[in-house]
Length: 312
Image (cartoon, rainbow, N blue to C red; front, side, top):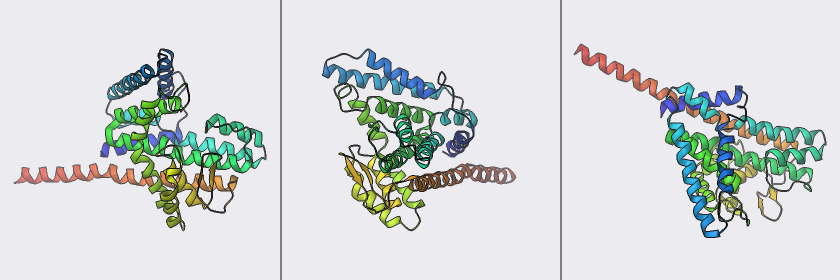
């Protein structure tokens, strides 16, 4: 566990400092290609599509975990691969780009960037406030999906666990829609992703509660009250916690209202949300530092015991 904590620390540092891998060698891009091939060969019958979706998902999880298990155990090698499977800097930059467009009063560009980077909903008619709210929602949800959950599964199950999680999450992102095309094909993938995010989503809400100054009671009250309003059993936790922490309302028209605070979503509130997310990362880093030091203390104690036995 301590070695994994060290590799996770290096991975976060690499995420902050190194550029993204080119698409032709990026593992998530290859996961996407695998999933597209699965849809290409999927049968038309609903029952068969359900079974095929489960089979293709299982094969993808096994393949990704198997390949990850072949990576050398050196902390740097592990970290470089882990870094490609989490995405805090890209998430923060995407929200920042939308924020910059809103500050420049370029609503059309803000809508385009929001749709391109962060959400799947139609953004063409969103107001400036709705764009800001959607970006904040995506920041909160993806703080869990793209940072906390990958780190959780890396610490819990090593690089194979992280790779399997990212494969499942990518399946859900591509197939997890309740429409004629994906209702049956993506059903098992969606349930798998729900299961794998069960703990990380709630952990993310708890971390947001910890880093919120002066709004902790409201953060948890809103998270507890409103988390069930989203279609996902997990996404509502970090999004509702963020709404409570910001004392605002995050609204997806026709779907949910999270929070009941009076603060209007705008670029300034987006900046505050980004700062909260950054505090979560700092808290995670602190925890990983403590975790990585445990092995050094254990080795030191073990060496001392060995010397004592030899002298005896």
